[in-house]
Length: 462
Ligand SMILES: [Zn+2]
Image (tube, rainbow, N blue to C red):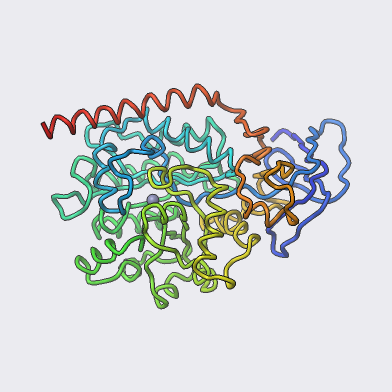
């Protein structure tokens, strides 16, 4: 590989999240191509280095977003489903989602990736599970193309729904697939895109949607395929009381016990939400990962995730924005602040401090996704770095920048986002796409779908 050196010079504070929790003051970071090679004071540039002045800026590892549904960026602010809890919210939205096309998935992904990158996220996953029966099925391929165009590190999960209304599930039959097709496509995507190498920009995981939209058999077969191929497993779990009732009625078990009985526990498994669990179930989850989604949990009034208890029990915890129909943004920065506040609402003075929450959003998320090459700023890790500028008036009078980053809550402070050694956001703007053009096109595609469904719904009524 060609040698290409970047030197981030005179950073006011480098927060590493390494094993000794090192924080460097007035230090430099030397990057060779996509890898951090040195962090210390006074690295002298030599000829050929690209030197970037970082005076007054704070450096953190890029945030890792552990749960999302990117296509939902096109379905924000739909008035028919506001102020509804999960099940009726989903039922209302499936009717819109049945119209999604590869084009919609592409623009939805670009909108979400843009906002993530602009708020300091360098790695995201996506959980795509809606494959309308009458539409092309290359939706994950399209997302992967979008990720590579914009320059974000991407863990696509092959989501699935196989239990339609006619089989006792929640989604209508027009958005579910048969299980053989799901497994064949899962295997195809792993073969085509999963990169096991260090610094991989794309990986695949398998993600049946939830206990109430797939069969037990699909959970078992996805598990076997994932373990055979060495990819991770993901699903929604213990998000609502409705889900708990569904599992008890259908399987005679609460959600965590159901997953345990299916062998869906361990370092290669992570769950979104995990709210309605008891002390014994927390112990069962030791070693597995969870994606904590504070905004979504508040908006859908799902409940509060027991974050401190999970961390103390040895569960890997990351932070996530969740899909934009329940958030309604992909603002990773805001999510970090809400994770902090929601933890304090539940635990009071025993809560996590600002540093601990930042660590969950970076190193924690990397661990949840099974990666030891990102999430920490140190020699040998990928150059996924975010630089913040706290000179804005929103931070004047704040006496500890690390606390202020989390608690002051201004979200327009990302000066630079670097992914795999490449500057993708500079002075708050994306360098890889025409954001205005993308926004316009995405909104057109979204409006067409929503108009179409509203038209169909009005015909049905009248
Ligand atoms: Zn979700």
